[in-house]
Image: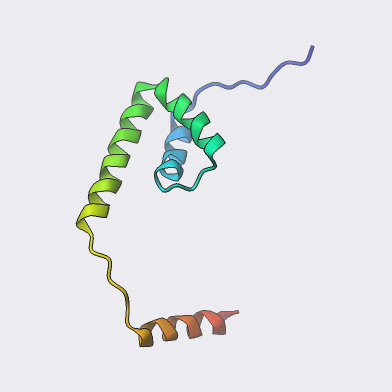
Length: 83
């Protein structure tokens, strides 16, 4: 019988991935797995809750503004010239 790799919890790794959940950048399956891991660690749960609250507050407080068309064209031209 082959030994299974260790699935030991690593708070640092989990916390690095928490922002992917908050930003909606994870697949449903990966999100469910990470949330299950977060639920089993008080430290990670606290970090997840705090990070979620910060994102929500920023979203509510920051005003989205669009740049002018001239600036947009200028940025696109600079990007095109770099390639």
